Length: 212
Image (cartoon, rainbow, N blue to C red; front, side, top):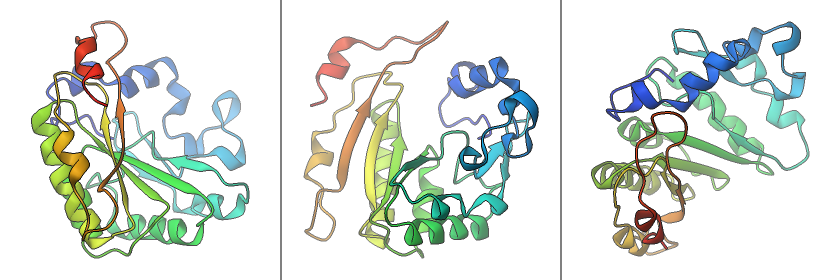
């Protein structure tokens, strides 16, 4: 993804930016060669340039369809809802999700409004998990509000609140009672973790212990 201003600490503490500095060959891996080239069945559906701008690789969209073993696919190296990724490409990805029903697909995002707007016209996908990344109470509230909008449009969508890094106490009790049209709980799970690496911001153990 592009390093954004959603989290004020993002430009300084971005784990992916630090990781890519150590592994420069991972930039634009879709076309990487030599020692940095991934095996054909492990190439990313999109990657990122050295400017951290996402690069789509539509020619690789059939990889999940060719892999018959149930697998978890995750958009780890970029922001799926970045404005530089076209809606046409996102729609093509969703068609793969629908067709590859034996896989699970995970999409972490900090762009919650863009996520809600996209699923306003998209179909239900029971094998798709949206990981709503948040770091404090305000961001968690906004993420869940937008996530619920997306879930109303696509009732099969599974929402996971991704509190990584957790930078303050977050009350999640209210989210656990949310329902989508009286059906299953809106929140399928919660992921919690601290920031790591040099210069990491503090995460108090009691903040984590309070999330159960």
